[in-house]
Image 1 (cartoon, one colour):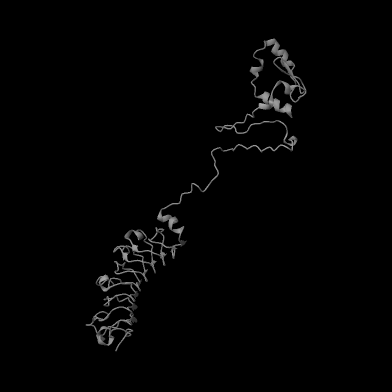
Image 2: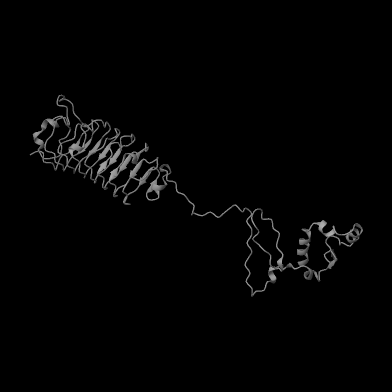
Length: 332
């Protein structure tokens, strides 16, 4: 084994280095003395010294021999300190296994230290790390939010209930053309920018009960359900004829506010109107019916609640003669 290692070393030495200093005849004579391939027991000439298997360790110090490995651009990391086989290592000495050089020095082990999370709303990562995102629905209930978080553009249903949101800004829903339902129940919302919802043409349900609203913003015409119960809405905070343009509006819940009048007129699509527990004392003749058209019956509007208001409904019979049912409230 030791001789084979030496032969490997000798193969790396150019032949010219061993013969350049000899005359031509002397070189031919020494070449005749070279052993045939495979005969490791023959004497090998090297300069004026003669090596054989018994004394080659005395001529060359192999203790500092370095393994010539091609590492490319990477400096060699492994040094051979012993040519003895691993099985002959003394058991009293601990030897560490040499590191095997990588076949691709440019590759490194992947880590999460350099992981960058995208902050683009269309990727949905910032919101979906704290909220639950299921398909086109985003659930951000009861996580102490103070603002509307950036939402994925595919969001169709947003639930951010039981938080601390106080202000709805125009840019909060910018570009969310697929948004169909917004539920912000039980927050601290006291103000909504007037154009925060007007560009949400796909919006159908706007759920805002248990907040601190004093006024309503401009509403998209496609809205079907508007729930603003348990707020601080005043009649002055609702624009005149604000609901007439909502041609698909079916359910309007305005109970438990500070309204002192019925905010009509209402679209013909309306089916349910809840106004209980307000401050309503009077009613306009045309708030529900057309006073000039006595033959018309408004059959869709079947649910009107006015209980809990200081109004005597028996004083305004011409206001609801077109309704299929009388409003719920006090008639005495």
